[in-house]
Length: 259
Image: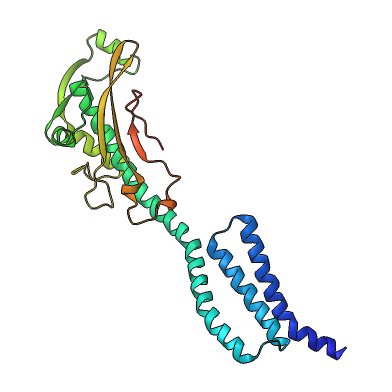
């Protein structure tokens, strides 16, 4: 009985280590885990096997020392890389959300500027210089009701009765859109609207054109940016399944965003 206990004490930990390593290898092969996970399992399995051989005195302590000093640094590096392979996707998600939020705000602001430009000129532009000049220096007409509409009447009825009148005034594009950007998009201003946030001067792609709908040509625009531009400091496999962000479309007369 005592001999059985001694045998169990000697072999229990090496056996568990070997079984654990083998389990990791099987899980890595069956579950599609990354190569670092597989390497870690192989290392644990080998350490377990060497431990069993040492207990059985098949190999000497000096041989084990050589194996130990060869495998240990490799095991530590593999463990660190495996940790980073798990941690990096989590870190990317945080950075992705932060960058996407700012990029989406800019794209929505470009959309509002394009809509305002079309309301004045009847078309969209593919030039940020033109859009910036329009944003900073131009005005657009706004129809305002002069007078108070009684609670018992609609605005149209009050207009027909002469209680109120309408007047067209010119409103600064900058004043109108800046307040909207600040209120709805948390953007204080849209200076340098063509530049993608978090980049070193990279620009959004701005295109415009026309599509035919019912024998009528309809103006369209598209503002977009590739994920390669948003995440130049990250490997492509982190964002390869993410859509490139855009507003508008060159094939449909829509101004919607694609997120």
